[in-house]
Length: 113
Image (cartoon, rainbow, N blue to C red; front, top):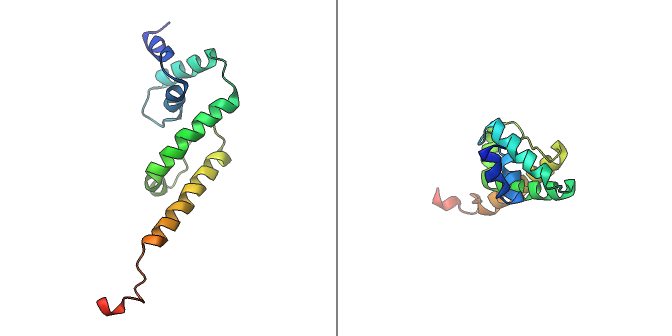
């Protein structure tokens, strides 16, 4: 067994799922070790999807603009494209709403121009 895999045995499930969900922060070997450790823990697919959803909710909330600029949807190890798209749409709608709330209606303040 590799030293990395031994370290991963000490990590929590959400940390291992986060490693697999990261786009390019980890090497393929690290991702393979994380997947093997999760497989050894005999977790239900729904539990893994729930953890992945938590991670993507926070990730998209924090980095929505980055994903909008990229023009490509992120990829998930555990979630389907539609599940990830639903999370993205939810946070995009909240972003648009916040933006509208913070915008200034220039027709009301015409005297300032």
